[in-house]
Image (cartoon, rainbow, N blue to C red):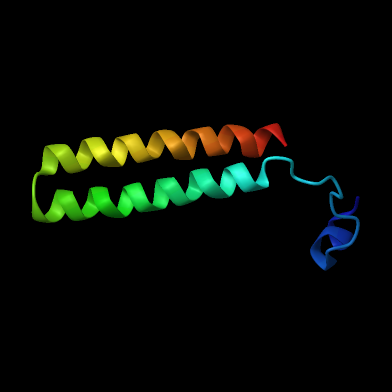
Length: 70
């Protein structure tokens, strides 16, 4: 596939993403966890907020594994 065709959107990868629903759920968990973690970090306890953010990042890493597994 040439670069010109890629820019125009032709000859895209037609394989369906088997993990799309799972990836969306994992991304949602990550986003909610990150927002909650930042709020707790800023307004309550920085240590607990950091732990929550790191826990949310685990979900993002799992989502990335499924993205590359496609």
